[in-house]
Length: 368
Image (cartoon, rainbow, N blue to C red):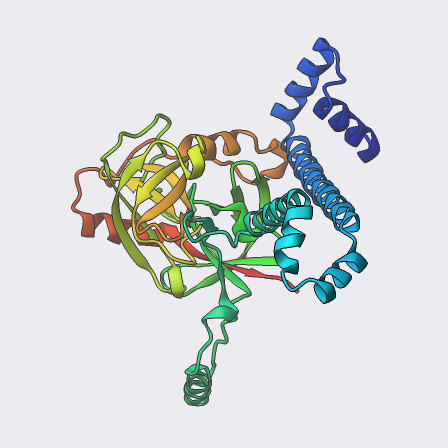
């Protein structure tokens, strides 16, 4: 099917121009083809943006029309002749001025809302991919000089490029399949993953589910050696409010453990794809695993809510499992078999983290 044909189908679907049978077939196509579903969502968002732009143009036209009705030249004459011109102006044109002011205020508030700047009383959702350039500060020169000194001392220095963006990922299997967030790797020209020992391996994005914010990577570096059996499993069902949960990731480029609890069965603005959790996360945590006390992976860290202390969100593990099931078989050069045994259950938290750290990676994204 060509792009034009697919676009025509999407437009008919969104405009409700399909017959009952056609709609059923298209829903089935969406379910079985992630690319089709992704294009549908993008087209829907594009239409929404056009609609918002059209509404703003219409508001501007109405405002201009009202301004034209108010005779500017007459206004100037009133200013010169009548000392109480403001009162007279209000009496003659108060209805038009009120409508114009209302439209202007509505337009300003709409602009602030859609640009995310109207947040004095409402917090916003923020994804936690880390832009490496934003971390640079006044110590950058000192760090560079220190690195140069170390390189001069070592006979074979190893330069490590930190990438343009950073996030976290974790092993799905021992043979190099990694899960992370889609927003961490979107737009990437190349991707590397770095283990707890500081070793970096080239990886490729083999599958994405933008609607779930899930991406699946595969390490394809000849230097990579298979990991041991993955120590955690993936929970298929839901988790309960109040459960103790924790995450492990790479905010700021360093491995960090974050303890907390599950506070809501839905995410930001009632998003059923996600949990809300009270847990300390920061930029760079995106894509990290969310685990319960027993060491089951119950979600993937995605973002946080600004101005609300401890309100973070994680995509539920059920949607990670759906994404894995949707991977086309021809995209897998090796088998992808998930572990169904949990080696973390019954261990203390420090013992769990010692096992876990070898299966959680820093994801480094490079783009032009």
